[in-house]
Length: 561
Image (tube, rainbow, N blue to C red; front, top):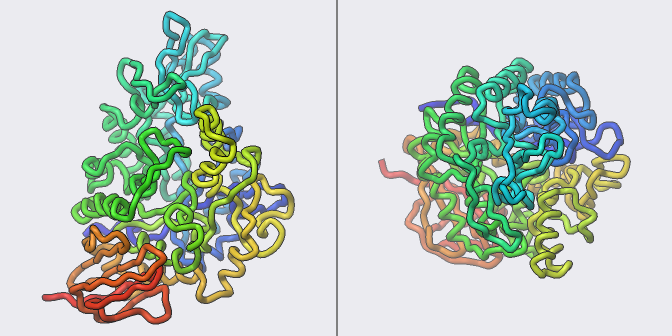
């Protein structure tokens, strides 16, 4: 049995800009993270995933990096970063950082050199192409943030490729000099004492050979760049080299953001000799999106589809590889709003959701505020939003004939700013996040949903997360939770999600009512005892089991030797 340290860890993602403002400028910072380390230690966190704090013009909130080896002034200094690593280590907390290497900022010195002259030595560090004979861009690919993925440079009379914003030109991974520069940068950070990386948008680094047009899927005349720049043939060469040269020699946690990877491809990505420790999958959190990923045209989904998505990868992880367990992050809306009816959001449903995902096979990730039940925001105007994708979706909806009210409703449901609204620390102005105007408005429900209140209430979502973490890390059930085989049951039940975990003749069952109404079911399982429940008194007789609204129970089950 392979027992790498990260298999028993619990990871907490921090979006620094929204976590805690230590100097009163309205923006969260590294000193703010340092001030909250004791809180994270209390919760039981082993690893912090720190979203980008690198030097950046902040066109895309730090995912447009202008210097990989400097800290953005908004967040502090390199000395602050070193102090954070040191103080976290004193509390047995490791730090992993975002590794953003599909693209840089257009203000990065590499790109400034590249665009300065067609004969510059770094010209081929990015992807430059001539336009078509009719003067249009090289291909009809639509960028992730909307519009053409090609930006024309008047000086050199060529176009450069950007999968995301026009201020995020794609690096040319076909150039070995680029790859070596990336590996050297990784080693520089490892020498600083970080313990791994969340690898951003890594399945976009290989582009379609030939650069051909793709099928147009909208009246804007473009087709999705994902058809030509997502998990393309030949990407294995790049990922294998990245692993061999930058990851494998060190004892790292590497988790890849890897859209486009099918369950059948998981072995080469996260198997025993895979490219990464684990990867984020999207099927279970993107059930409401169609292939076109238009927020204003949501797709209906049901619990059976959600269970199927979870089981597809969990079944593979029984034999090989490792999962990254999550329901929300900085790119997703809040999970309570996604999975629960608005009128039924509360401690019971939040605890149910936490239990369902936290006890699967893999390493759990908690996104800041998830542990206190933070919810989506509903800003009254698109002017209140900062997220580039939200603004693009809003404008696209208007162009397709939707009303302002309909477009805004879609943003309320799906915006990435739902997760980026400032952390709610206490019932005081701006939720205790800052003493000045925050960079993004605080959710108006901070008087009732905040850390200070949650810590005082022993029946809060916060304390339930602490119980889950303790159960996973420091109980007699730790091994079965971490290493146990996953087996789903009641797969076709429209209201209940249920699975077992079994390891060395120890077995637990996780049963959850995913709806706000009572449900009855009979199960052929013999209970030893109830381990954890979100109600005060858990039912014991599974042969005639009645589950109350959003009730979840974890049982120790008798096994036949």
